[in-house]
Length: 221
Image (cartoon, rainbow, N blue to C red; front, side):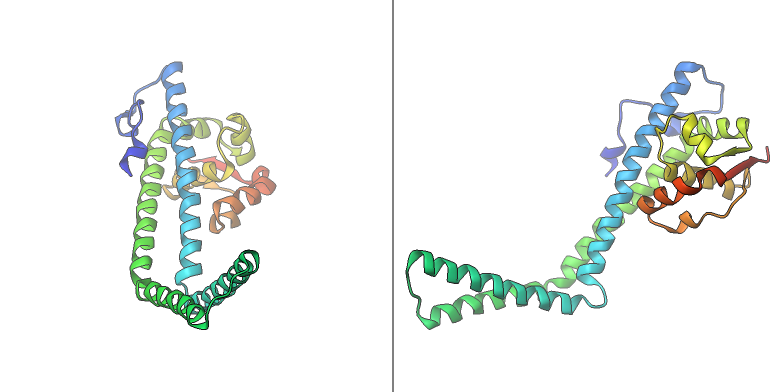
């Protein structure tokens, strides 16, 4: 997990509060953009894993497992009938019974190991969630000497203007998430409550595109 954060650039923890020249600011924004890209991927992966967890291990997961087992019976039967027809062979009844008995035993074994599968998936979710938080923390550190300074200097400013100022290199949802840290810290005032805060990032980005011009950030510094 930590290998994802390893780059040839300076760590976000090495950034200080001193002034920066043009090259240093460009480096800060390059690092912020790189972290934002990996953070977005981690967030998408986390959403996918949680959806998979809900599908296979949710409240109705047992019925879902039974349904897939029934589907597997049908698929195996169809494939077997097709092979028999193509090869022009016949199988005794005990072989049919044996095949489906083996398939049933495999299903029982999978059910028996269900909790182990669930724990493995939960472990992956925890790892990705930790990675996401680490990346967000690094993004916040980098933004303190780049994005936040620009926003405070140009406030009041809308989310749309911030997005266009950076030539669309950062997603609206990512900008909103970073700026939310400043809002929670009391250094920015948000002129509109965001419904997108409670939406998944992919949906939030679409939601923000419609309202980005109306979301105004005001600085209290």
